[in-house]
Amino acid sequence: MELSNEQVGFLKELVSLPTPTGSEHAGMMLLGRRLKAATGLEPSIDIHGNLHCVLDRGAKRTVMMEGHCDEIGFMVVHVDDDGMVYLGALGGVTAPLCAAERVVIAGRNGPVNGVIGTRPPHLMNAEEKKSVAKDDLRSMPCDIGASSREEALSLIAIGDEGVVDSGWRPLAGSRVSCRGFDNRVGTFAMCEAFIEIARGGGCGCNVHYVASVQEEVGLVGGKTAAYDVAPAIGVCCDVGFATDVHKDDRRKVGDIRLGDGVTVGIGPTYHRGLADRFLAVAEAEGIPHQTKGTPRGTGTCAWAMRLERGGAAVAQLSIPLRYMHSPVEVLDLRDVAATVALAAKGIGSLDDSFPLLPEQP
Image 1 (cartoon, rainbow, N blue to C red):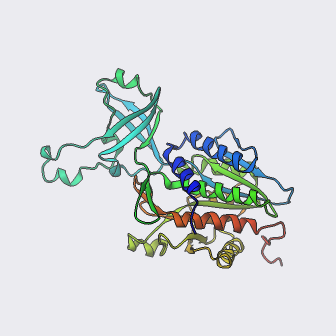
Image 2 (image 1 turned 45 degrees about the vertical axis):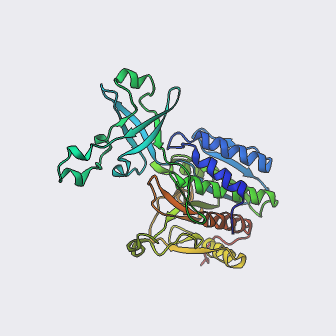
Image 3 (image 1 turned 120 degrees about the vertical axis):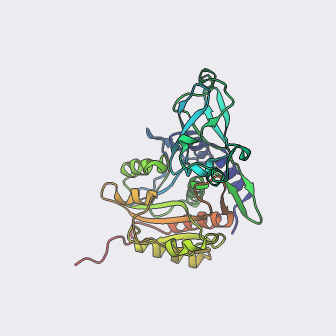
């Protein structure tokens, strides 16, 4: 099970765009243009920045298929008299990982390159060498080459956003490394699945695709979109923790491996009937898949769809990912292909008669 060369090219283009939380518009425009060209439908972007595309069949039920488009990043919060730029974290940035990294900031007149430097080891004693990477961005100024505050502010402004400048790197076989797979790859998978559903004539429900904003700072776009769409069924696609490298994590989140397929979530957040349907479809269609037990609420937009208004019945599909929230996230493109296939065929199997309510007294 593989992505086409066209799909891989589109994914590569999508992850090349900086889409830090609050600045997702370039990614939304790229997704919207693809949807319009592939389906003939008219995508739209709402006041919050969420991208919507709707396949309305006049059914009683609506399925909202969602993946967030934002990535973790930085915001300029201060520039000192020497032109050094101080950054605040957008989302779950691990500060020590930023040491000696290249960054790119969306400046006033275009991209502005910078580096987060470190002290030369020659000037540190043995104890200082043990903590080269600081644990607070306030101790890690970004050097954009400016020699004064005035020069720096001619290039950037307070509030400008940026990301680590770490792009697509093919690895062995079908594996790839890039920053920000979390979660452009999830919304890519849902976009491709929506296209497949639309080209196949739809399913027995109305299908509403959403690429959401600002998930990394509180599921913001997922909440507002779920309230607006009011789906009966929500299917969220996000990345999930692969535990094939750091094996001790298996005791916490299960045994999830790159190359073993899409992960289906099981737990109280998720509708068991929907999970069973997706698992049955995966078995019937020969789609590689894994399961993950999740005993409590999660930080994905499945949680947002579950709770907004009266709440939707939700399912979670996850793409295994190594080194999450780092500049070198790694995934297997075969798992992405499996996710596209299961989202398309699983959602495509739903109709107004699919049982959502439990047995009644």
